[in-house]
Image 1 (tube, rainbow, N blue to C red):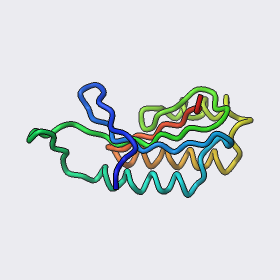
Image 2: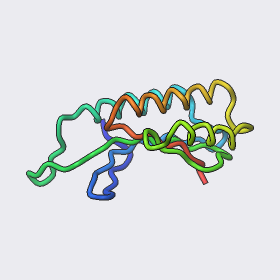
Image 3: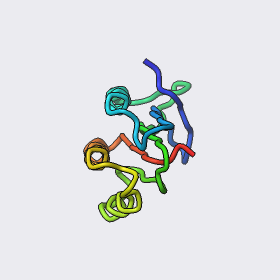
Image 4: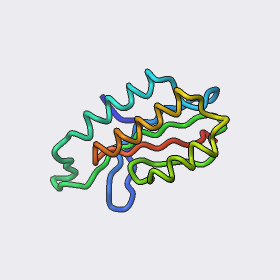
Length: 122
């Protein structure tokens, strides 16, 4: 099992899995679940060693969709940020997709090494 990308940012390695859709506002639930499963496994690593030295790391699920206004990253975003993001995208996300985004926010909050980003694919 390999991640889609490894990004080095702010002295931290980001193990990233990306799920994209060009037609819908969010990737299919099965794709989101697949990405989460992989990243939860990676986030449970005790350490990451590069050239015999431990390095800092986090895991990130990046979800991109069509016509999304702005972006949001969990767990960094506050509850107010989440509500604002959903409000500006009120015509983009249906009720089920809003519930999925709220559950993703909770998952990221409960797993300190997991970040989740929702943004436009453009």
